[in-house]
Figure 1 (cartoon, rainbow over the protein chains, first blue to last red):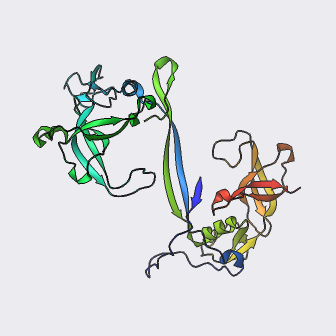
Figure 2 (cartoon, each protein chain N blue to C red):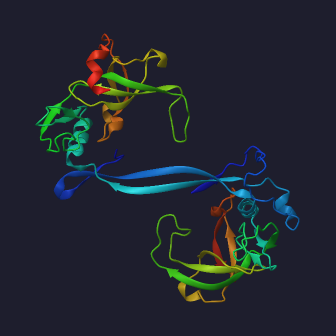
Figure 3 (cartoon, rainbow over the protein chains, first blue to last red):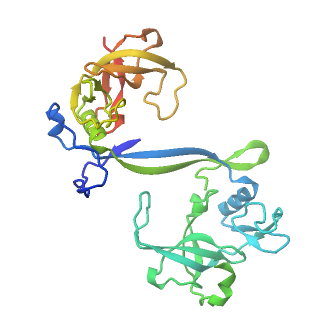
Length: 195
Length: 153
């Protein structure tokens, strides 16, 4: 798949000594020389995978279809990981205990996004945050909305905002975004282990 | 995350297609840009090398001497199959959705061939076959503007 942006600005002048291709002689092809030149192409490099998330994340995705967030606990450290990968990254042991988490969470850190990049559907600026879901020990990424971007701060309490029940699938995209839940902020000292 | 998950029998583990796409934007430079501009206009151009031979598709540098090439020249939209290979199992993203020949086509006025699809039955394919370019109706200045070659009837 390719397409072309024809409304390109004229090429900038390249400083002396910097490599550039020489001008071409188009005198033999005047009909081409007289129309607007193609200067760039879109070249999509597309990789199609047959993706399987594995057994533990399958359990997580099945639960999320039922509007539940489920983590899995490390038997040695007691830490709860979400989304679960089936193994504790600390002890290397399988995580066998499933733990029901809350549907609320706390901002651990965040980023105000001001750049509009290709494929991005969000209006800028928006806030992408690391959110510690209640009952878990590792934050997940989420979009924070329903609050001005400059009022987001670590410790902000959030609720998850979900798609309609009829639209629920085995996808993390069931959570549309996160929004303030009205509870008082969590003191930064309580988040020290998660930053 | 899977967009549309399905279950694979015995393991009961989810599975789904996942497409990772990088929307690269590339500058063409003046030579390839002129070639794509010509395609958009429904024609071909080549470039003259040091010896006066015409290379099509055009390249920026002489393959033998490495000298910069700049002299763009018109090339015909018909040509001759120099050699070819039959593609029975067509894959996604290939120019045609049914079996076709990959062929090296030397266009009239060019001295080098370009590789592209020839849309012809297997029994019609032969070395020396005369073919004509088939262009897309809506052209935007990309390789996709050239759909394939077809036998000259």
